[in-house]
Length: 190
Image 1 (cartoon, rainbow, N blue to C red):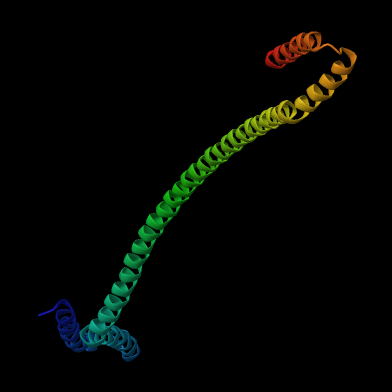
Image 2: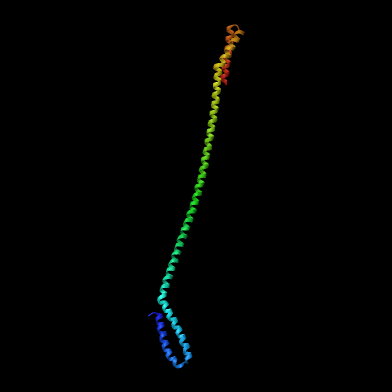
């Protein structure tokens, strides 16, 4: 027998016993007040018993449901908190990786720019050397043209003038040979 049933059984037995004996010693008014108090206590005990017997399991079940619901929310909150920590760490790691890659790209860009500058400088030197070579070749071509075209004219013109001046062939030939050898010598020195 449960504790509540025992208490109700004992209180009913005391009520009957006390009521019978109290009738002998107390006045009717005191006895009425005593019965009212005992009835109140019995009613409280009966209500307590009924609540414990029928309503308490329902309340316990609802409380257990609420507890499991809140426990699930708490577990879900912990999972979300862990996911948030993991996501934050991943974001931080991705940020570090991004900065690392950004610095590598910047370094690569600078190295590439330096290579382009070196290539431009090399090309500029090649162009300058090519221009110098073209200038030298142009000067050589010009000198060769002078030698091939102008010098023979000058020599022929000079030779005719000298022939007229020196009517003797011998003297003019010696003089011409000296001038031609002098001109050839001066051309080769340049």
